[in-house]
Length: 380
Length: 131
Image 1 (tube, rainbow over the protein chains, first blue to last red):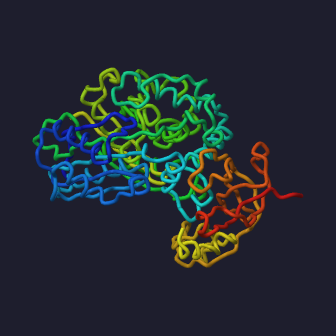
Image 2 (image 1 turned 180 degrees about the vertical axis):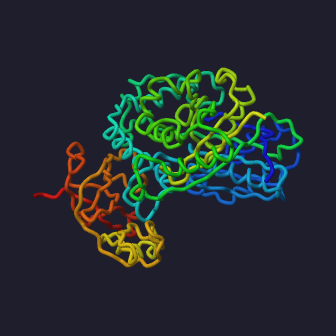
Image 3 (image 1 turned 90 degrees about the vertical axis):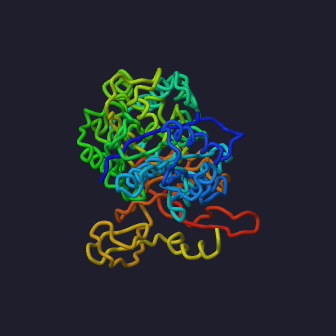
């Protein structure tokens, strides 16, 4: 298997892009990545997206996006693993180059959430779950995560304030980030005063509704000075139902993917300088930190509340704001994380820069941990 | 929701029908093709217990489409008396009165409708057991 490098990145701001359709947003990010890489030709295109079918009624995004960016003829396909689509699409793109089948791959994620009304978005996001059973109860994905939120506070004695601090830390990191949806601080009191979304989870503990696109170009690492190499990627799944989990408060898919990726990269937890985790809600961010193996079980909320995940802290996490403050355009989110890790490793993160970052990890979750993709990148 | 799609799931929705593994005795819900515990393909249909206790719960306030009429509603993880855990709405209960350990029983209830002239969809929900 060949070593793989990131030759280019491109992304749009996460916002409500009323004037842009899926293909317009995708093209903005993709063409930026192509220009950044200084390339003209690609062999294959992986499009990451979750909601185009329910929200825009759109399928066959691979061929659609290849056409719009002038790459008619290349191999193209859409990758979908609910909210883990971005991380999984990246994994597929890396495999295509590592295997020797492709020499230049574009992996791009795009999402237009603002096209949906609130109840349409709740339904669309719940499509990650079993429609004949889980979704049939009327539960939402935030609702599923809220079950874990309540259990976490009961089992470990964590307070609502400690868990809510995950969102506060994200907002602190987003200040000065040009592509963030909400680049401003939010106090923990404001988070806890916001209406309940699904008890005990407040609205301001959940990522918002945003549109965006992010893309990367992958090439063989040999013979190219790109500055960033893909050290490893891994994807794992867990029981599709929370009821089937060995332990409700562990994302086994995150544990497995993290172990596989760190082993393959020859990197230990303490060597990870920058971490991007999937905080679609505060509790999934907390449980991810624990399940990935960075913090002891039950200590995640207090670890974050205590300031250890700030850019100057022991484990800089969600360095541009994470899903909550940078934004979470579902299928594109995983690619935003990759682009952000690349920016850190290239020393191009501006006000969001983590000094001396050499190794970064990104984690993407599908549903409430049914799928997990972990990617490890390093300075080359 | 099409008629065929609704029709084939009715038994699992109207009665709590799961599976039991002929090789290791595990109770499985929802149905699988392979026993999640031992890997056996010998799974037989099994009526599950219809009483249990609340493990944890939430209150849904931003519902998906078609669930607006019952909002806000409780969704709970219930551990049935035979050890199987199921996810279900909790009804006939005040939002503030739900507690971990609460005893509940399955009840046949309306879930949603397909517009004005489509299928009315039913399923099990849980309600507090009145001692």
